[in-house]
Image 1: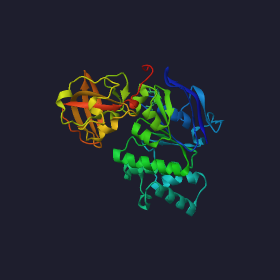
Image 2: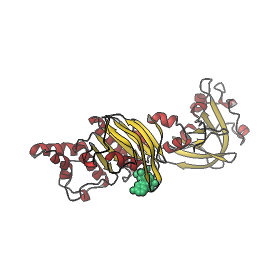
Image 3: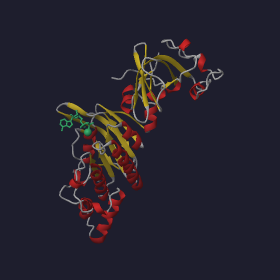
Image 4: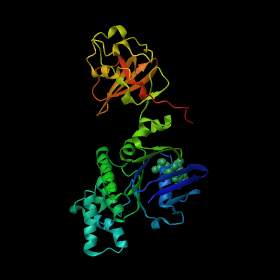
Length: 362
Ligand code: ADP
Ligand code: MG
């Protein structure tokens, strides 16, 4: 069932929270809305759920307007950050709630509840437990089982993982993807976390100030964002050394130290457009992969030299701040870099990776 949002507009006390949002969400796909806090994500979800009324525009399911339907009659279920479970009911009764309303009883109900709990990784020992006796991650699993039990056509998710610790978040993110894909359930998931949005989405919508700024496949939007605002919402960017473009920090690499480094480690940048002499694959002192990889006519490389300002371990990668002519550039590398603050270091990047934007964002 395709969900169509047409020209949705909503103001609160004269301030626009949503401005003319129009988008088609294909059935069975996982769509993520990614935007900073206050960008209108919850407002949009609440309008689709029927919990809020838009000023203008329409929500349609397979071409039929939902606008006149109250929330409880819409074939959608919302999963909230704070789980919104029934606190006085056991886990089993939370899950049984919707099937009971649909008339399911007896052994069929028990079997259905058990299967749903198992689907979200909760074993039988949870059946009699109340939400207060469950951890945050377990409660969110239960909330997901309860959502699935009502067999909604669409699942709406409002920052469902935001209250969880990082390791739990990753596990639940994969569970969400697996459980909803298996059922072919359409999902509209809003989050301010780019990692979550990029990992989950078949299709990613980027929001800013109540407007839809970009839509597309996650990897494509990350690699080729249409504006600096979108680029920054999806991850960090760093200025291109000696240029007016931008780079993802993982595309600005450190040149390994060379044996005869002292003679060309001046703080000046090399002219862009000419590979540095040391980068020719012909040179005898280029034992490192990096030098060879960036050389060659088909992979135009650029190089600049700067001074290391700081080195930080981010866990799965390292971040090095390099200053060139008063500007600081970020390089992210997979392993511990062989440099220290105060040292000169060469930065290399592939010119095809440079992001350029037509005009400064409003
Ligand atoms: P997000 O979920 O992206 O953080 P929201 O949709 O909650 O953003 O809010 C968008 C804007 O609308 C914000 O400026 C917020 O303060 C405002 N807003 C949201 N709900 C209300 C409300 N009930 N009354 C007044 N302003 C609201
Ligand atoms: Mg919100």
